[in-house]
Length: 194
Image 1 (tube, helix red, strand yellow):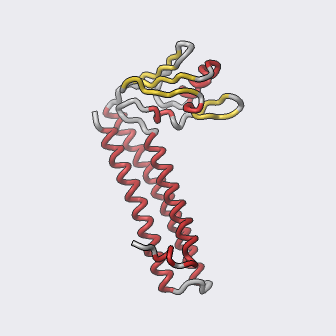
Image 2 (cartoon, helix red, strand yellow; image 1 turned 135 degrees about the vertical axis):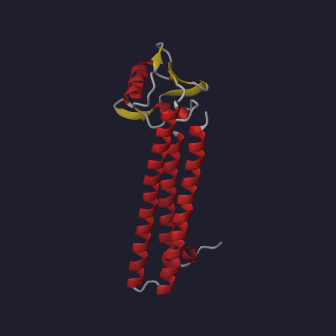
Image 3 (tube, one colour; image 1 turned 120 degrees about the horizontal axis):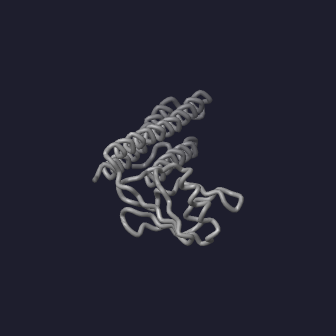
């Protein structure tokens, strides 16, 4: 379906800006989901961990090879062995419930099976993160509606155009929120699966 806002030159820029900002909120939510712990080990569990080394904070995957040799462990092989201790320290500080073990060359992280209580906590956390991102999308909608009201007030668009554009912004908002809720449902099912 062709977008009313995209076909109207006065609204085209606003439409693409709103779409970009909403997509960004969804992408951030997806990244958050990827790093959320399920019952299986995943290299993405460490995505949020930043290691302080070389005078800056770097993600672990930029410091070495991160792999999952089996469903219950993560293996980190740093390219520079001198950062081993820094990586280990960063994982402990991140408080993900992991106990990294180093042999001087690689770091092994046993991923303990999740308890029922832990699974529920993760789901609660997922819902909190989902709500934060829903709010972010709604804030983008509010900004869009404010801009539309201003355009109508300044006579750049008619009242009918304002109304149609607001309906479109609402559809865009509903679609993005629906995407995030779908992603969240899938992740929750993954987390609760024993």
